[in-house]
Length: 137
Image (tube, rainbow, N blue to C red; front, side, top):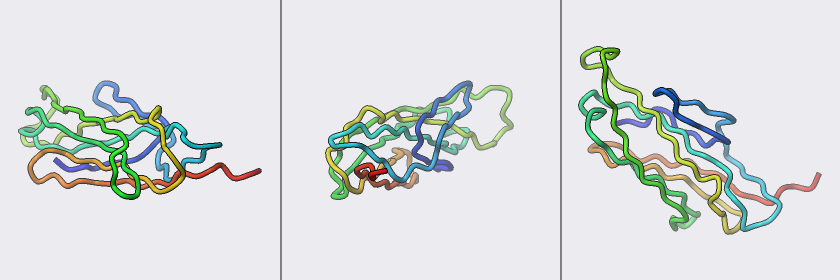
């Protein structure tokens, strides 16, 4: 399993095996005051072999502060029922979404979303972002 796409966004959903993403590439979160909702979602596309895709695999996603302290966690499971639309041996793209919009950030500062696929040989990925007080107009 490899992570081919990983982005923080305003909204994401999976429909019929496709990933829909709105306003991707978030690296800054401005709020009037803290604590405040983070207001972001994580959108992923995982590339899996047909054997991996047919077996259930877990993926753990955590929001962490600058010291690595876990603030929130989502654990999901991915598995694909391969149909006649795939060629033998063809790699499979599997979309995955984690919703952290309501999670509260305690204070301004650096944070990251750490993605930990629990498959053999899969490498973790971290997406950093900064939370800050909204600048005066």
